[in-house]
Length: 238
Image 1 (tube, rainbow, N blue to C red):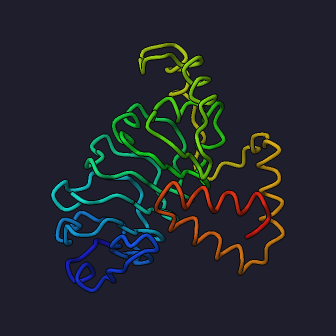
Image 2: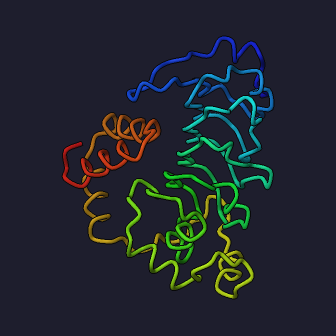
């Protein structure tokens, strides 16, 4: 379904907990948002969760001039188009529960200046050295998949893939060859002790509580919110 001007006009404009104006276009079965250019330029958060988008496409620069947070959880996004660019103000993207399954060289430009990126629930997270390579591709990241990026991770990423982002290096080219098809049944990578603790806490939750936690993660619009939720999970206070 193509986003219409009428849907934009009827869409709720709400203030999130951080008092950021949010344009809510979730659960509308949208597969094409070309007409987003018709929206007001005042919103800071664009919520497109729960639609049927298959690519992360170019956003009209004039219509997203103040955009800081892009919420795209629970779509069917498989890849990021070459034309997708950060309008300059964008700092946080949630792509939770989509179908991104390989690294793309364009990630360097696509995620420029991004401080928080969530790819939980995508096949790409099962690829070898996924976390280190994403940190190398997007050095501005402060949090990846709800976990703060540590100094030691940045150093490890530099050692493995190079101090400079040179795409022609052998180690980098090998990463771009990796691929896991969407909805793969590959075994999950080993979890750290802290991750195991977090999973154990979440598994004990009721279905209602799990859904509430998922909504909190989807709507997190800052590093501070993500860290707060992560700490609550790990301490069992969810």
